[in-house]
Length: 300
Image 1 (cartoon, rainbow, N blue to C red):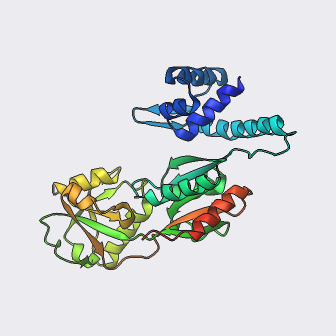
Image 2: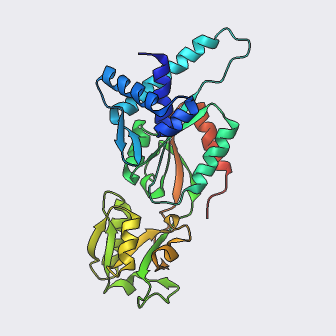
Image 3: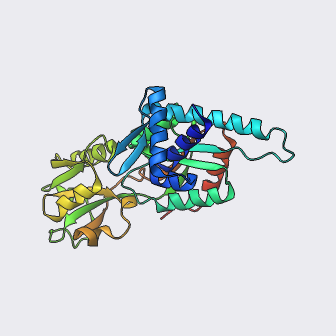
């Protein structure tokens, strides 16, 4: 097992792309792919899950990344232990975030922090709200951008508001309610809905079902979809109404799908997106990042 191969592995894992990693490493993509395949054969495990437009670490790959990063850090320390000016150690921070949301502000903040701390690398992973909360507790993530309601009862975390977020509803363009500035749940009694599959966002599914019950009706869901794009596409052809968060709406969705998106009048204020770390994480760089996020203004 060569140190160069371990460095190649870390670069692919953080870039989530053989193409980008090969460019940064100044080697050809076929050579890089072959070296990673040889590493997987030597270890007897699959390190990366390869899909048509996606590359992510397997469970074994995540474990191997933690150990590999530690090995390389120790090797770098040995290489520079007698230098008059010690060099900064490379640090990987594992960041989990919500799918479907418009999180351009997150990338902007992380890029600004990286410009000031050139030794940091971010391993970015999309995950469900529940997995983000669990992953912060068990160490899979160092920092998460998740829904505030998942962290209210956890005293081991620190959180700061990152993005204000509330529930909205998408309607076909000719729907009878599309002239209202805000829509009440009671107005939806006769409607049918398109919901995200519960594992994607159990809070939004449970919340809207409970809101229907509070207003005297059982919410009728004719379709369950895996992502926002599928749901809004079905709204546009009249299959039903769909709920979404304002944090998913970048201002272009209504025109893109030829639909109307309206705020709901009677909604919870517990769905803001927060930046969260575990108090027990002893990474100084992570706490510096958290302080950096605290100083930044929340996204409206």
